[in-house]
Length: 439
Image 1 (cartoon, one colour):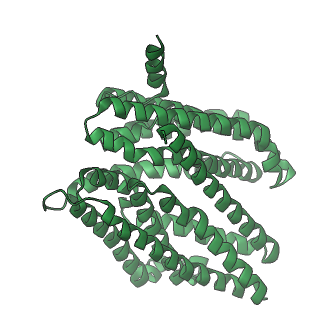
Image 2 (cartoon, one colour):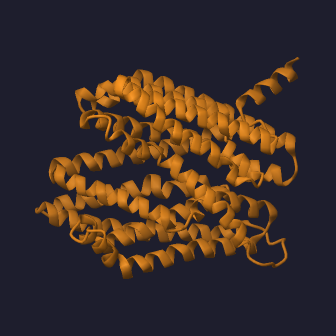
Image 3 (tube, helix red, strand yellow):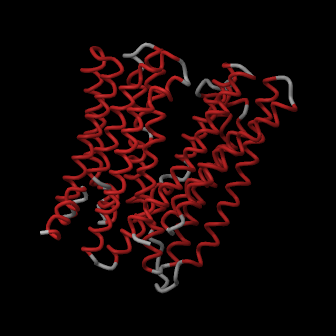
């Protein structure tokens, strides 16, 4: 199967799985609001957001570099370093979990959150955070080992199925809403720990897929930290870009507009997963060709990935234009005001795909810190754009500010990769190459 066909097939399956899981989560939230009330839904969302943020911090950035180093050690046949990497990532998570159990109540009390919903459900929060962190680490590693479906599906499919199943059982068996909510959290926590344990066995079983060709040597932990620190910041700025944006907009938009933009941002995050899935499939091949010093194959694979990602983003942009108003109506008639802002946000996805995976390429060329100036430029542009555009254009202004920020960010990364790695990661290089072949 050609690379383009493999990208199209695997990324389509990954995106379909993510879409299925997102649909289940939307259903869960609707049921909680209608059966147990909006207040309990709010507490559920607070717990879920807290778990996600804690889980991102627990591995100390090792989940962000798991794909990169798993792909490297697979290409080199360096099983010893891969096992050492896994042990350190799991150790960070385990130590963080123990500290949470031992000192969590004290820290929450010092922060004035001793009576919060988080404090009242601290043990299930800790268990959910542990399971989520393990799935993050495992997922990154499995992608690097060319098992992207096993990497993504634990979080994208099995977790939503667990949550929906647990909710339905609690709803049918427990009449009192708060008791049902408490039981739901415990069921989710225990169930997801089991899922994460199964997920971990997939990783451990995959160790045999890596050859043992390299001699024993000291652990490369200083190099891991050199990559983990910048990628932790990059991940924070990219995966939580719109969370940062919503906090910035909280003082500029009224609550109704902020809610509409928040829904648009969540839909955009789901849509952008389709492009992320394309690059998740191609990254191991990119690294293997780089390790073999095959510059032509490396450039070709980057170009084909950009083509698939650009086509996917164009399709999603068209779908947002046509279907956006109908999707937004599910949240209420006034949410259709977000149709144009949603389309603008999806246009930024096209820009990002056309400019290519510069951060990945810079890391492959051992320059992980080089991405940070472009990332800082994007965040600074977002802040300035919100100040200048939102007071006059409201939702459209917020979307334009995000589009401009992502555009400058993407161009900055492209120029950085072109200058420092001597690689044109944009689709323009692929188009020029094809034109020369035709001529």
